[in-house]
Length: 397
Ligand code: SF4
Image 1 (cartoon, protein in one colour):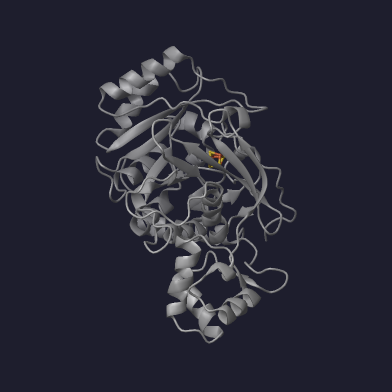
Image 2: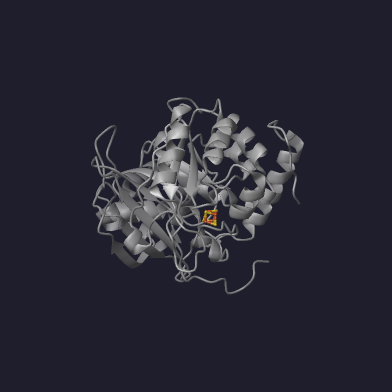
């Protein structure tokens, strides 16, 4: 059902609540299989602290053990109970009989000539998703771009992942597990404290899938990543990118308060309906209104608008002026992304002139508008290029 509005007023709370319930119910149909191995052992990654304490209580262990295990799993990065030296040997053995500390397995791994690294991770049921590490060229740090779903329900026209049907949601363990496995690869355990430089310094939820269509698992995974006694990333170091699932943006802002990136890509509804079909449900005016009320947005924490530059489609000076009008007053920056072609795509990247003219108009209006250099193009790791061969074997109920 399309609900176009012509003003920037918020949609009514009742409607938003009902919509949220509908989104969460639909999302639950695509939930991952239980985190249990065929031999009955349970994966401890992905449990909340409280759930961890319950698992330990079942085997007669006191709550302080949960704190101890949390430290080993998320601060030290230990995957074997036998390495947890503050736990006595008999208990290590009992834990190993009942539990595992899991990681996704690496199906393939590629490194680009610009040092971007891409993993194809395989999960226990054989489904796969891609994760990309993008080093910052100027500093010893970088972002881990992680996936939230295998495939995607949305079919953004510029995006390779959008050609792959949604197979299932990733569970919290699989989401935070991508970051943990990347940390293994860069030997960055234990978790650095405070401002100690680290290579894997931020998480961007910009990989495969729409994170706000898998909100519960994403939220649980991000709470684990933000826990100060574990991985300890601050909310400022996490950016969630959405195509504009308006009702869930409010909830994400209120509950997680992470940075928000919005895949805008067009400034007129008729064009955005085509490029980002979710726009038919949540049109531009609703999306921009949700950005205006996103909690915590300030000049220090700007909302990022992602804008993929498609030659002759959305890259005119008039588009740039309309963009500036739309986001006026929002603490924002605009990332201009040259389109990264993939096999079968029917768009072409904008020319350098168009990119620079567009950037200048946005910049003159007071918004930073960096032109993002494509990264990892030679290994199909750049923005919008991720895709796996995973297929849904049975339709969701
Ligand atoms: S851009 Fe994101 S939401 Fe759109 S199809 Fe690609 S993965 Fe899905």
